[in-house]
Length: 108
Image (tube, rainbow, N blue to C red; front, side):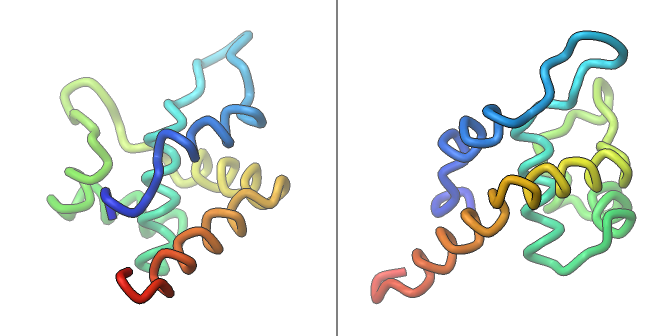
């Protein structure tokens, strides 16, 4: 997945709609939220399910790039808000169509 997902491009698309930090807790890095969202989609997990699975699965934890000494896995409510942001702006469908196009290629 690291090879077919243009993370940098997708992060920039999300950045256009991602809330700017003005007060309260700073928002979680877009790339971390994107990776969590992708795991949720790929493995058909609930918000709570993906949160727990990241703690339990070394492969998912590694994909997330989280250092448990410094960071926590974003909670289910944070993922819910992120997912709604993507849905509201049609970004999730854009990503889904892009991945399907890669997998549909003869060399994909």
